[in-house]
Image (cartoon, rainbow, N blue to C red):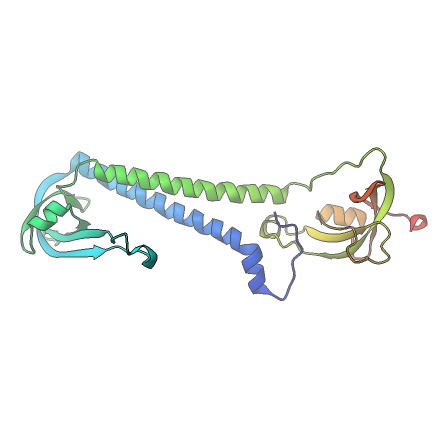
Length: 269
């Protein structure tokens, strides 16, 4: 969680430093959802063809090669991969059902445009693929795509759930030592949290910058800290800019301090 105060007036910096991690997590989740849905569809269609597919013939209408990409730094030792495509149309089909698919290189080298190839098709669901591929290639590819998509989606959900839980739970309570002494802390300023999870799931929360001990208005490099407070705490203890709160400090090290959400009485100031 970002323990900082939101600074208005610079939306670009707000997006880059505060919202970008959450937006990246959301993009990962959307990509995982799309991959899971496409893998499920691929797996389902392959299962239909495996169980109820019929052998048939299709005419090759197009034939081409598509090369992959390789970074310039790797081109001296790595050749780009090639994918061999065929577009074919099912014969004796009044709906002119056609499909493009990556073909085995042995099949691709052995046919030309106008030749016929063996296919497996489902007449009612408009599904078709080359018979040269094994019956299990489609289902395996679909299952692998679903698994990768599910991992990405679950990682995004877990990250967002953790951020939401951290925003909804109360701040961590620190315990003062037995020999610590009572002192005071001044609220220097107060504002909205920079953390996007707090803005979404705990919109009433505020971040306060407090300085511990006697600093005469906040000395340079004073014992300052940013602390999150809830709307109930703000209302109960009347927390605002300039408020003086109770603090407990280690007499041997003043930077070991704990803020106690209690207003200092008039006689203690």
